[in-house]
Length: 71
Image 1 (spheres, rainbow, N blue to C red):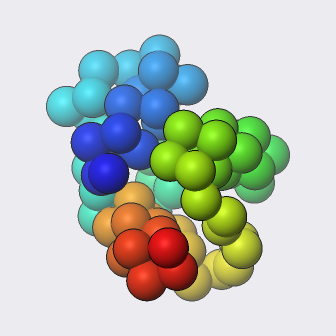
Image 2: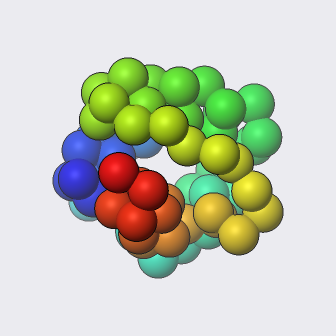
C-alpha cells in the first residue's frame, strides 16, 4: 500500500519515487491542501477505501496506518 501511495504522489509531482519519503510531511514533500485533496480522491479510488482527512494525517506512514485501521 505504501508503495502505491508513493507512486501516486511521485507521478502527481513528476518526481522519482525515491525522492518521496514516507515519513516527511505532505507539505515537506511539496503538497498543498488542494494537492492533498486531489491525491486522496485518487488514492481512495485506487485502494478502494474512504479517507477522512484530518491534520493528523500529514505523512504517508500515518495515511497508511489510517487506511489499514479503517478497512
